[in-house]
Image 1 (cartoon, rainbow, N blue to C red):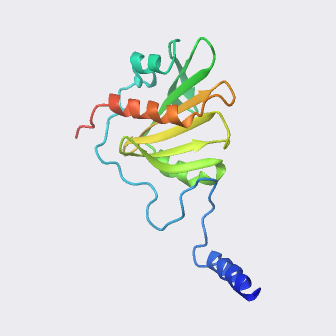
Image 2 (image 1 turned 60 degrees about the vertical axis):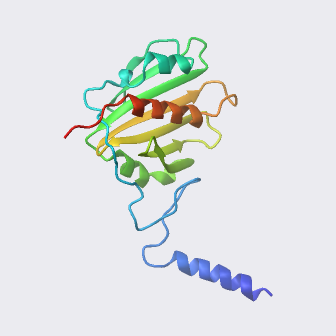
Image 3 (image 1 turned 180 degrees about the vertical axis):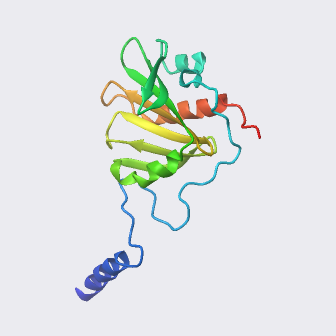
Length: 184
């Protein structure tokens, strides 16, 4: 009876040694594939000329209980914006990356995230990440157009009271709805 499990273990090990080998994946990572893991952008939107603090409307911020004005902030050299509420229970950050392929770059680093998922936001390719599985921050990187990406990060500042990925995705969808179509 022990031969079948041994054969299965050996088959699994040999499959891992096949040409190209298995790609490392973090928790929640998409399975390795020879196809491009990031789908192309259909219906591109235009981020040029939009400042990060204008990505979300006052009504969208108020609906998310943000009652303080956005503060421009660079994030790793990219223009960004950060909002907080007076009660210090939540924080929203947005930033914009132009001219580089953010989604493929982040995909190449997928093993460094506790939570990693290739997904969509409003029909656009996106990546959802969390640095800690039970963490209070969640980020969505969304390709508005080829080489035009924005990031929305939502942080619940009250441990355990709010799952952050639902609000982060809703905010990213809101940003997509605010962007004009890419012309040309």
